Length: 198
Image (cartoon, rainbow, N blue to C red):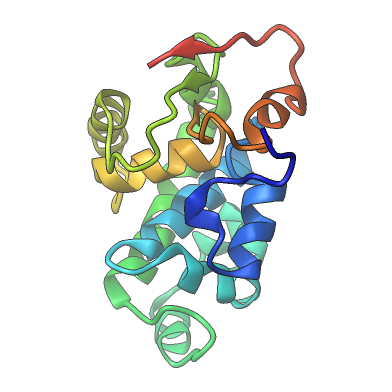
């Protein structure tokens, strides 16, 4: 196995390569970061992840470093300003969904529900080994999509949720010959995680 072999989807652009090598598939346990990644995946809907990556810095600036408390306070004027921002994806429904989802996130927090604990408890704190990155969704993403919608979240369909689960390491979908396959697990913040099959 070549030490330089990576997932095929990441080969076409240097930005994709960097994202793949440094972030994609590595378990994330920070609740706010998990929420941020879910919001970015929502912006990807109907587009490509490369577009989101190219606009990621502008998104971070426009959405107050993705701090839910700040975003929840965005009013109609802020929405109109965002719609005039050429650095981001200017889709009203997606922008308004992020503001709405910030409020949902904060409500869960106020109720004592930790977003990270909620997510990882669904897989017994254990990343799932899938090795099928071409699949657009999974039984797990279908289940969590339904649950997220019941909690009040928007733009959380099963395809979006599946991409999110792959990105934050809940599903380890690195190809079997990808040099990141085992790195994604070895860099986890928790030492007691095992890999189970999807």
